Length: 238
Image (tube, rainbow, N blue to C red; front, side):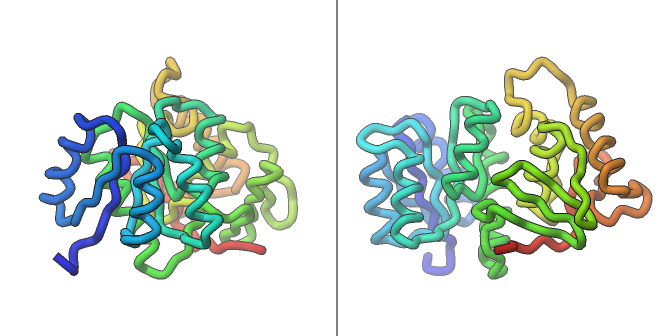
């Protein structure tokens, strides 16, 4: 039991916890549960799980407030937020408040498991959560998330808001293959009436701005039939 990663699942919907607990236990996790935000905060502080999955809408304290209090207390426990609105404001709030990732409801159990494993892999390798950094860089590319500006070789890149959001997500999840469907959901929202070709169009815009050759990429690699992966090493900037 001790060598199993400890995951705190906080959600007030028993149908979700009842299905996820056995699923994650079969996947090799030790699961703690909480049915409200206050209980989640207490367990996160006292039991020190390896990762926390927080529903945003919970009684007694919402998931965002739990996350804010954890971060104010100096606890950088990797955290994934479960949200019910997939728009740009929701995404920005989740990341600005220190979430390592977020997932829109409804979701597939296997998708949440993939996110959990990816976040744990980054944290266990000693890499600080890039999602909590305001400025990050890769080679001569600098991304400023406060000002929503990206520069390459100290020259401002002319990116649309959607292309910037795609680049932001790829850079904060380096070495992770991100599917077109996932980018479409994350950046455009799950109700956006568009296909994955919309993602390809923004990727073309990004590569043109970065001068990135798809056949010999420096920044973004295409994984045939799977999606895109940011392959350049990413670091935090002060």
